Amino acid sequence: MFLFKKLPYSSSSSLMNSICVSLILRFILLVFVSCKTMGLMKLPPNVSVPAVLVFGDSIMDTGNNNNNLKTSARCNFPPYGKDLRGGIPTGRFSNGKVPSDFLVEEFGIKEFLPAYLDPNLQPSELATGVNFASGGAGFDPLTSQIAEAIPISGQVDMFKEYIKKLQGLVGEDRTNFILSNSLFIVGLGTNDISNSYFLSHIRQLQYDVPSYAEIIVNSASSLLQELYQLGARRIGVFNIPPIGCVPFHRTLAGGIERKCVENYNDAVELINSKLLKQINSLSQNFPSSRIVYMDVYSPILDIIINPQKNGYKVGDRGCCGTGTIEVTFLCNHLDPTCPNVLDYVFWDSFHPTESVYRKLVVSVLQKYLYQLV
Image (cartoon, rainbow, N blue to C red; front, top):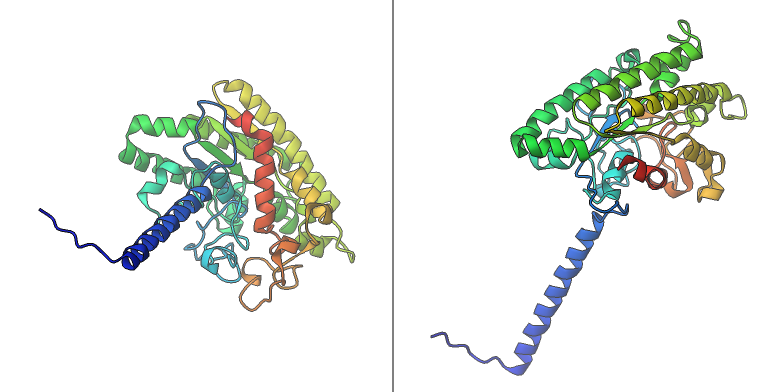
């Protein structure tokens, strides 16, 4: 028999109040944590997206280049990541999250998409997606070679290794389900036209723009076919953004007024038009898949050209340093940053801010979600 001593009224009242407060705090914490991963995208009935898998460059990279000491395409140092939790730089080329993170967040999968090469990556993360992107990479093998980034072939090799690990964790049947229902995102091409063609002039000396466009599109097509053969069925392909309007190129080639470099954007538009046709062709050849061309060029251009209309004040300079030339190692702890990053379209002279990335991902998913799933 258990004997309970009756507490005085004041003591029992105080105890009950403490218990109530504790329960309320726990409930609030539970709701808060749940909301952080509550997807905003409404999927069709009986449709699920168990994971997101990303291939790409610095727009998508969440830290795969951190331990690659050969490449200059790294940003695992301040002030990068200053608006992430704890202000810790993680290898994301922005002040905070990048599109890869917002993709998993919008689907309610998790808060961040981890880099596959993150030494702290937990096996439990594999079933909900990882990131194979590498800053400096391109569709053109030369582009990745110049930047000493992980090329497409290397990113696909990591994906093959990922499949084996996933099979070991959840079995072959579940792995096949995850691959066929997950969202694959490809975001490449920016560095090809920016670095290999216009900045270094290497490809410009070898090819005119239409010929180089064919090389890029053929490489993209090969990647998409290989992903399909490896089990991907839902693939979204980001087109190339308007590189002629990033602060870096405006400074180098935009004249004294630092205008958008029209011939750069014209080249991008030509490549994008060819990429669209190729993706449409692939979609017909692989009827059991959904390969979707996703236009990021137009919404980003609108934000850059019309910053005030989109809630920003500065669209032609980045927040880091002078905002005209600083990127990767040129944007470092010695550089001051702008007073309010929310006023800026760009974080450094090449990469948008977290705020812009969030708007971009939301608008793109709203437009293409039902084509993808």
